[in-house]
Amino acid sequence: MTTILSTQNIVDNKLEKLAKRVQKLKERTIRPKMKVVLVGENSASLVYVGIKEKTCKKLQCDFELLRLPHDVTRKEFLNEVDSMNNDPSIHGCFVQLPVPEHLQDIDVTSLINPEKDVDGFGGATIVDIYKGKTPFFLPCTPMGVLELLNHNQIEALGKRVVIIGKSLIVGRPLSLLLQNMGATVTVCHSKTQNLESHTLQADIIISAVGSPKFLTKDYFNKDLNQVVIDVGINRDHNGKLCGDVDFENVKNIVSAITPVPGGVGPLTVISLMENLVKSAERATKG
Image 1 (cartoon, rainbow, N blue to C red):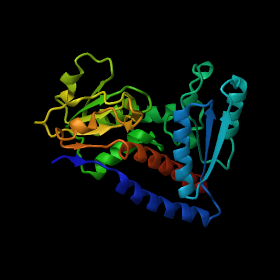
Image 2 (image 1 turned 120 degrees about the vertical axis):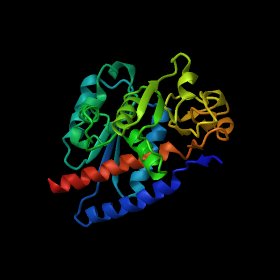
Image 3 (image 1 turned 180 degrees about the vertical axis):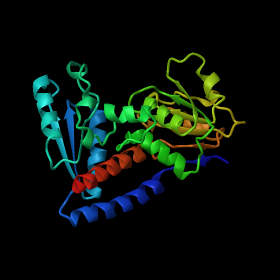
Image 4 (image 1 turned 90 degrees about the vertical axis):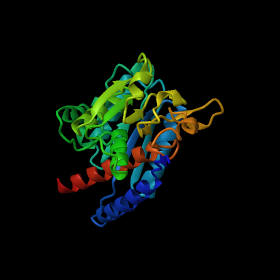
C-alpha cells in the first residue's frame, strides 16, 4: 500500500518548537524580523510572499515587505538591498525571485549579507555544500526534502537518486547534499533524452522541473518500491494546484509519494522560519 507523505504533522511540530524559541527571544526583548524585497507584480511571487508573511505572523515574528515598481532603476534597487543588509533590526532578508529582465544580469543572491541569507541561496552556502561542509543556513527547499526523508526514515545512503531539475535553488544544492549523505545521484532535466531510462532504475525520484503532471506512470517502476518527492508547484489546465507528477495515476505504482499541495511546499516555508529564528539567536550571542 502506498504511503502518502503528507507533511502537516512535521510542520505543526516544528511550529510549536519554533514558537517556544521565539518566546525565549522575546523575553530578551528580541523579535526575529524578516524583510523581503519584491520587484514588480508577479502574481506567483505575491502568493509566495503572502504565505511567508502569514507564517511569520503566526510565530509572532516581524515581517516587512518592500515593494518596488517593475521599472525600478538598478541604482535604487541596489541601494535598497544594501540598506536591508545593514539594518541591525533585520535578522533575515532576501529578494523574491524572479526579478524583471533589466535586473537579471545581477547575481541577486550574492548581494545578500551572508549572515542574513535565510533563503540559503548565497555563494558562501553553496561553496560550503560543495566542500561537504554543513553551512549555517541550508537552502530551504533542499532542507525541507532532507527533513521529509529523515522524518519518514527513508535512507539515502547507498540509494540511487534521480533529481529532475538543475536549478541553483533546488536541484544542484540538493544533489550535492544527497551525495554528501552517500547517495548515488543523477541530475536530469526536462530536456534529458530517455529520461525514463533513469527514473525506472531509481530508488528515490525527486522532481523539481516545474511542469504540471510532467511525470506520468510510464516513468515509474512498480517493482522497485520507489519513493517520489514532488517539489513542483504548478496549475493544471483547470487552474488546480498540482505537482510535476501525475499523482492520481502514479500513487498506486510507487511505495511512497508526496502530495501537492501539502507536501514539500509547507516544509520549504517552515525551513525558512527555522533559518530566521536561528539567525536571530546567533545575533543575540554576538
